[in-house]
Amino acid sequence: MSLRHTLLAAGVVGAFTASAPALAAWSAPVTVDSRSTADPLAEGAFGGSVLTGWLDPTVSLAKRSGDAFGPLTPITVADPYERVWEPDMADDGEAIVLTLRRHKPTQRIRATFVALDGTRTGPLTISDRSHSASQPSLDVAPDGTAVAAWQWHDKAGWRVQAAIRRPGEPRFDKPQTVSPPAPFLAGSRQRPWINVAAGPGGRAVLTWQIGGDYQLPESSLHVLTAGTDGVFGADQELGDAGGLADVGLAVGPSGAVQVAYADQHYYGHEGPVSLHVAQGVAGAPLAGPDVLSTGGKGTSSGSQVAAAFSADGTATVAWAKPGTDYEAGGTLEVFTRGADGAFGAAQQLATGAEGVVLAGGPGGSAVLSWMRGTTTANHLRWTVHAATRPQAGGPFAADETISATDRNALWPSVAMTPAGDAIAVWVTNTDGSGGGQVAAALNPGG
Image 1 (spheres, rainbow, N blue to C red):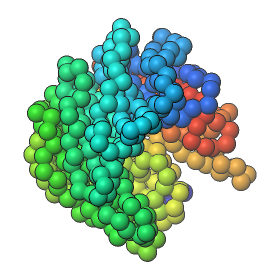
Image 2: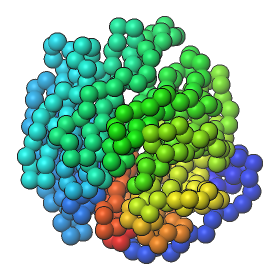
Image 3: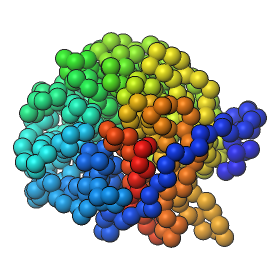
């Protein structure tokens, strides 16, 4: 989709915002895992590292070695009744791995803690054992605070349960049930869609929503936050969330929270999609959402919204602003505000963006990545792109293609090290699917 098409669909005529010059070059991409896998994660620990293992028996870690990565090494032990669902790491290298255990008496969520020296604690059950649990989500903050949430099968309907691991604690606190039973609608028992983000000192933010089906009514996005006590407060409804909101969450170094979401609409409810942002402080109600931008109806697969805080409190929100055509990507817009300021005008970086991911780093630094599909001679090829922002702040540098051109490159993940280096990881394949070999690249100095 052309820039002109996207801008006209949104009723805007303009040009790309000027980008800063690139401060450092991305390294040539290297293959981290030649097996077929999916959902690799970039991590800032060990000067940059990669985690793999989604739905596998074990999680493996590859640590940075110069401008490449060392061999993948398993950090957990296989269990015939368990599969890896969500791994993540703190900046000091401690890993937390959520697994789904399918064994009598109930299906449950378990957590394994892997210390810097490789010592493992667990797996420990963190879901309520009285009923089955499914679909866990996890996020780990730089200081080791972690938040996990999952669908919990109460007899009255699926609910959201969550647990927080406060920094320095050996395990998660007791699970908290934070939503009412999901209703029976459209001929089936509905399940909540869940997003989480962890912040320092035991803080966290969680959203849930009933949706994802054109037969369902459009509904609010529910948000809850937890302060340093690790306890989620009252449920707050954010309106205009569509049939299923595409959500980006972040908790800043001082406890600031931002909830960014795009109100996706399904058949029968088609209409323009807007980027909404609600802000506040963890442990207190958020202010009502503001609309930062509005596009067309043409949403795409993968994440279209991302949010992050940098270490100096700079807040960043990015989204792929849709045009009129579905599955065509969107114009990549970035909004930035200082710790005590307001969001400024959008910086437009690229067209055709999908699978948007974002991470903050030291000072005002950040890294942004996305994938883009182009069709030549009726053949669709995918590439991974990135842009960085320096520690001094300012605009993001120009769009760079960081993947090789001999294979499709899709589904990026990004992180920044405490020193300010940027890490990007993605899957490569020949068929454009969700899995494949794992490749990665580094940008020293972010």
